[in-house]
Length: 174
Image 1 (cartoon, rainbow, N blue to C red):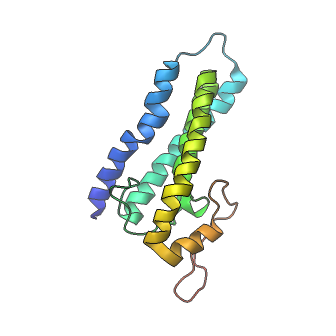
Image 2: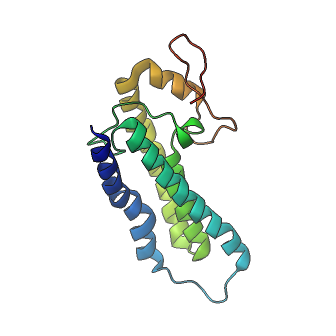
Image 3: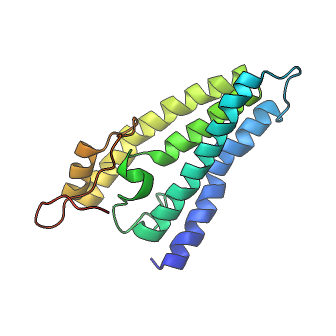
């Protein structure tokens, strides 16, 4: 896939999937109505969660399209295993970023229903990753994915970024 097609496809998928999951559905649940009075301590937590989630999500999509030459969509997968940026710390940065944005909104809007939605997303993402995504990646990328999965955690980020070994088996800086 050409890089330009990967970028356009990834942008479309960003709007269609995370845009709906972390934007449209939370809006439908909360109408983005903030309770009065405000609780500043929750805002202090909510704003950085939403911003960090949005930044990680955008960065992950860019890295995925630019270096993987594909999209996160199963319909147009990456040509290469993506092991750059946030993917060097955790295998599922997009899912974690979406969860951070939804959690931030749940705090900002003091929404119990949004917390229930978050719990459902955690279960759904966990099942999807284990039952579909990981077997698909193992089949597509073989030993490269096996080495990556062994070194990089699924959900809890590493403190030190992982670098894939080069052809001689030495760890390289990416």
